[in-house]
Image (cartoon, rainbow, N blue to C red; front, side, top):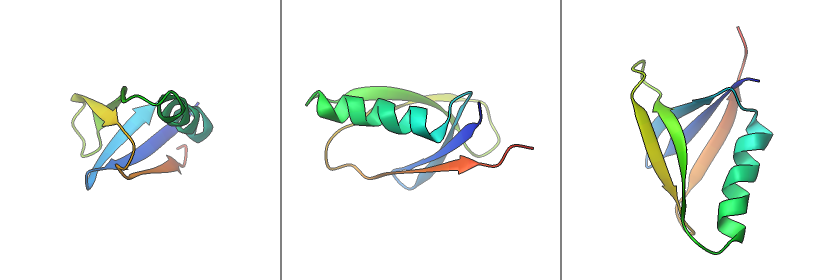
Length: 69
């Protein structure tokens, strides 16, 4: 599994141990249910602080799969 960068609210976050497809499917499942939901991510600026990002219709989210080292 890899690392996915999530840009949410103009900030960068990372989800490790999942593929881009996994994260995208999780977001699509939340939106398809017609309710808001949370995904967990880490701060993308070097600290390992965990964040919960609220996924809701109308809030832009960008995803990118980061190369493995």
